[in-house]
Amino acid sequence: MSTAQHLVQMANDIGNFFRAQPREDAIAGIENHIKSFWTARMREKLFAELRQGKGGLDELPREAIRRLVQHPRFRPNQSPGGDAG
Image (cartoon, rainbow, N blue to C red; front, side, top):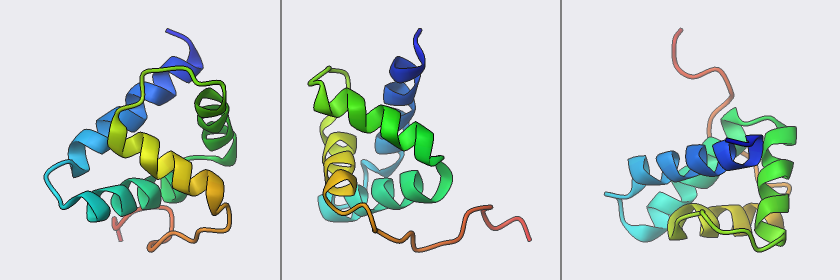
């Protein structure tokens, strides 16, 4: 599995986590998670996959990524590092 395919799978897994929430909340949650916990390099590689029209992204993560591409200055709602203390 290539790095890009792995990132697509990770984005889809995040989407599955948020899927039970209302659509807009789920998309915002996916956006926030990717912006908070993914490196810029990881995000750019996933953005490139989306630009190239390569498949694999489910609808919710695809919309979250599309919004991140449109609004690159999006600020996460939480600081990186989680809530471990």
